[in-house]
Image 1 (cartoon, rainbow, N blue to C red):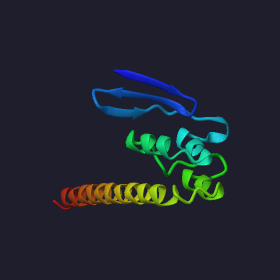
Image 2: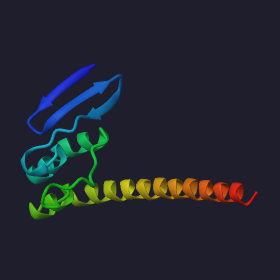
Image 3: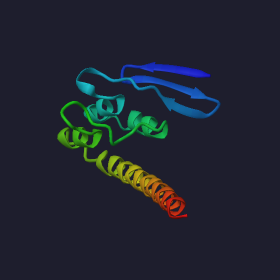
Image 4: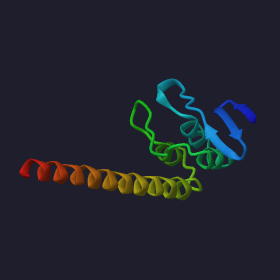
Length: 115
């Protein structure tokens, strides 16, 4: 196991599996927010590879993408947008699956009540 402590957060690698520990700075900013605010593409790529959530918002409602845009780091915008879209798609798929499970259970309960 390898640990790395960086000014932007705490990382750990377990047998090739990257994990980002939820380091949150003042104002609710995550390591991803801070890396985007500083325009640090290498740290952003590391954090995203380690499953950092690009949809997280700080206390003012800003995502890492917002900070990249505000800082005029246009090279980061496509990377963060792509990751956001991937995560949004996964959330939608999981929500649909969950809705299907709930609907199936309601139908089963109704069938039992009708018997």
